[in-house]
Each structure stands twice: as structure tokens, then as C-alpha cells.
Image (cartoon, rainbow, N blue to C red; front, side):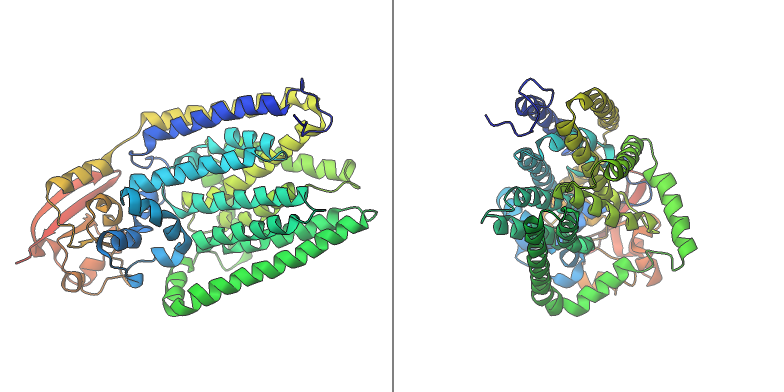
Length: 506
């Protein structure tokens, strides 16, 4: 078998065979570790400042479920299809075949994540970094939890990892005819990332910027190779604009008014409008959201790696080209920094920051191990200590699993919920997902809030006791849900008291 790491013999610590012997058992263990969470609630400590996956996991697929279960599709009663169009197409065949239960979406998300790690390990250049990424990132608390939620963020991150894989293949084939195919695939996967969730639109610059900086990093004596990368930059830029134009013509322009309405609401007042204000928010978010025990080891090793890369570049690599994969990771990490300055920073928003930081660390340690076999004495203890720390936290989350959503679904099933009559409320997206009843969220001055009882004629309305999730949409219109209902049942879900108003249909 060909030795993929020049300078390393089969007896070296990071030979291909030994990497595989560690990687595959760890991947199997990772998969098995997720299984107990597939039908459990989102972790109670995962989203301290937002409802997070508790409501949004059902929200983003509500229109798809209604289309499959009832043949009806209404673009305007939900923001899910506008924000995550490609996600709907990915999940459609699985929901159509296996049913629209959230567990199906969770299984798809998990298998996609596992599959992407398998793909990364198939690359000679990325095999060792893939192992480090598994240990440092895939086991990290926040990242681990969202790997088994059917939400757009992890699907988008996985597309970017596939983009990284094809970029590494492009670098491998830079002087061969197959290079164009890999370059186009790289751009296409990054396009799918922001097609899955439009908030990832900034990643459109990743591939062109990576190839351009690679061209600059190639020593001038290798003029032919440098020119190849300049040509690749032009092609990647052209293809990026082409795909962006397709998105514009096929999706944005036909839905322009509603699209702008949704995005204006979703993105308004996310950042302070002064430099001191931005730094104040950045400092607060870093101290209280990023610099937490679950993330601290990854943050520390990322900082050390970045310092090491800067010192190495200045001291030893002035005449050496930087690997494309590492440039990709560094640019990704750089563009993710804007999220720490966001006033509203849910856990799912900084998952891609975790992924980018972990990727830079994994690639750097992998390349270091390839070049200096003696580095194993430093790398392995650090990696496995962090992995062990991650496993302890995963075990703690396993111990505190709850099944509130499942309990509510059982309650609704015993209540003989009519699958043809709608259930209203932000919480309905998730809680009534298994019932197959249409679910419509209500939010004041945003969606579906104009006299919803008469408009939708629901069988059930689910609200928090103070209607906080809808910004008091019902109370602001003078609608007395208690008077409009036959009965009311209050159930505890996570930290919220939810009222279930069964509407009088007479």
C-alpha cells in the first residue's frame, strides 16, 4: 500500500493503517453514543438564552410535513422554506418514505454527519485531521447535540466539510485534467451550504478567497503552478457568481417580497451600530457563551495553534506553499468571528464557529504530525485529554436526558387529535409533529397573527402561560383563549408552562 505521508514508514505512529485502526472504532462509538438521544428532548442546558431546538426543530420542517401529509403547501404561513429551501429537498424523500416524525429527520442528520466524516477519512491528506476532528469537535458538547437534531446548521456545516474534501482533491489533481471537476464540486457544496440555510451566504467567498490566497502563497519560482491557481481562482469566482445568479433568479426574485419581509425581521437589530458597542457585545458573548467549560479546551488549543501557525510561517515557511485545506479553514474561522458580536446569539449560530476552529486545529495538528513524527508525544496526550473531557460532558448529558416532548405527543395521541384540523402556536411545530395535523405558528406582527381563531379554525392552541413565545399575539388582539375553548390543560415542557386550549368547534 502506498505511504501517503512522505517521510513516515509503516512503523511510524501515524501510518495509514494505524489511523484507520483508531478512526473506524471511534466513528462506530460516536454513532452508538448518539442513539440514546434520538428520541429524547434537546439537552436542558444547551440553549440557555433561547428555546432553540425545542421549537425550531419542528418549525423548519412544518411546511414539508404538511405537504407530505395533506398535499397542501403554503409558503407564507412559515419562514422555514424561505430560510432553509435546500434542507426541505434533502429531507423530502426520507420523510416521504419513512414518515414525518422528527426522529426521521434526526436520523438523517446523524447519518449525514457520520457519512461526511467517512468521506473525509477517504482523503490521504485529510485522514489524520478527520480523526482529530472526530475527537476534538464531533464529541464537543454543543456540536455533538446538534448532530442529532434535524436543523439546518449541521447540514450546512457538513456541506462545507464536503467542500473541503473536494478542495483537497482539487489540490491533489492541480496538474491533471480532473482538477476542474473537483473545483466545481467545491463551489457547488459551498453553494448548497447557504442554500440549506441562507444565513450562511457569507461562505460564498470561501472557495474563491482560498484559491486566490493559495496562488499568492506559491513561491514565485513555481510560476506555472501559480498561474494554475490564478486560473482556478477565475473559474471558481465565475462559478460562484453563476450559482448565486441561479439562486437569485430561481428562488429570490419569484418570492422577493416575502423573502425580504422574512429576512428583515430575522436580521434586524442583530448588531450594535457603533464600534464600542460591537466590542462590548463581543466581549460579553465571548466571556459568557464561548468561554464556557464545554468549549474552553477547544478555544485554548485553537489559540495556541493560531500562534504556532503564525510563528511557523514567519520562521520556517516563507518559501513553502500553504495547503489549500488549511487556508480554507483559516478563512472560514475568520469570517465566523462576526457571530460573536451578535446581540442575539443562540447556540446553533456559533456551531459553524466551533466547526471552523476545530478544523483549523485538526488540520494543523495533522500536518504537523506528518512532517515531524516526534510531535506525536505532544499531540496525542493533548488530543485524548480533550476527547476524554468531551466524553465526560456527553455522559453527563446522557444522565440528564428528559422526554417531555414524547410525553406531550402521547397526551395528544390519547386526545384523539384530528389530523385534518390545524394546531396553532410556535410550540405546536414540534409537539404536534407526530400527529400529522397541520401546524401553524403565531407571532405578533410577524406571521399568522391576524384573528387566527376565525382564520384557521383550529382544534387546539398551544401557548406559554404568559404567551411570551408569540409576543402576546392573542392578548394584544383581545382574544380570550380560555373563553374560546372547551377545556384547558397545563403541561410542563422543559422550563416552560404550556397551556393547551381545546377550541370549541360548535
